[in-house]
Length: 164
Image 1: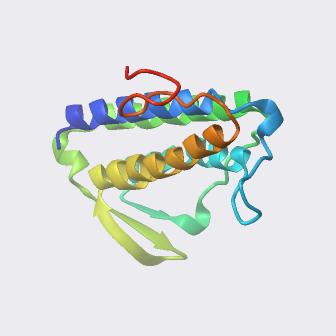
Image 2: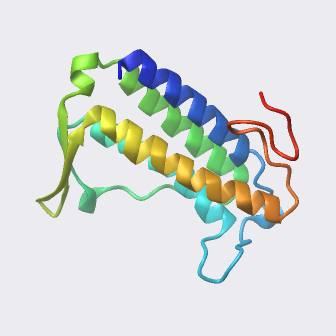
């Protein structure tokens, strides 16, 4: 995949994800469908923070997850959106600044100095950000539905909105 194709996919998936994050109501931040499930706040925060894999995979050749900085505070839906917007813009800028060849370069994830996985930088964006984001975005769409909050069109119409 070329950088431009990756950016098109990135922009589309992040715009859709932002639509769901915008719908998290302040009075439902601690709601969860089951005691073993994470809260709506937890999923929103995770969606906003996971984009930082791009900051690691696109700016370094190796990153130790043991040194990863935890996300900042997100007490409100607005805090989640602000974190999401910051991280999305920063990662997008890194992707846009790389050549197709640089996106095919190798990045290694380590844990306390030991290699856990090696992939291309392109795969960091596709797998560790976009695919992961799509998975948790699906969870959030169910949380919204279970709380009678309109679910936006994602890849097609929903019971609440026509396709975009």
